Amino acid sequence: MKKATKFLSLVEARLGFPAACGLSEHDMVQRMLKASNGYTGRMMHLVKKAAFRAIQSGKPSIGQVDHLGFVFEEIFELGPRRNPFLVVDISTLPKMKEIEFERLTRLTGTAEAGVETQADDA
Image (cartoon, rainbow, N blue to C red; front, top):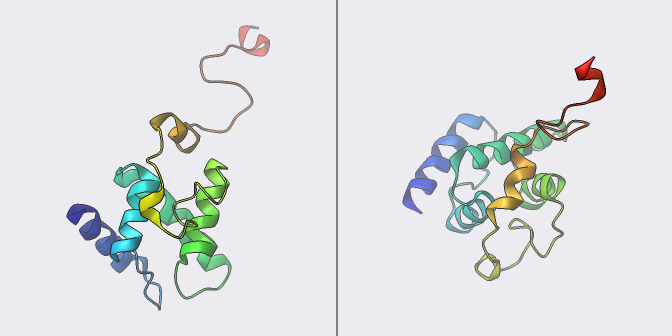
């Protein structure tokens, strides 16, 4: 928890938003840990997409619901009861299974990786 808090504090300092995002607050750190299973790269992916969304909407900082909650749902499509940024009490949310993170790491395309198409064989 301490390492994640320090990491998110450093990230927020580099974002350059005029208002505080609260990424290193205890509740938000817990939410980020649940949303990423503790992987900093996954945290960064969520923060980066949320930051772009905040900038595009002209907001002074990243919002928990409007930006992080939206981005998480856009990626995982788990609904509001399983979204770490939308649930009221984060302590009641079970840990995500590692297989659910495939959506975060898989590139979107027309075929599964390793699947040969007829055009590739020609």
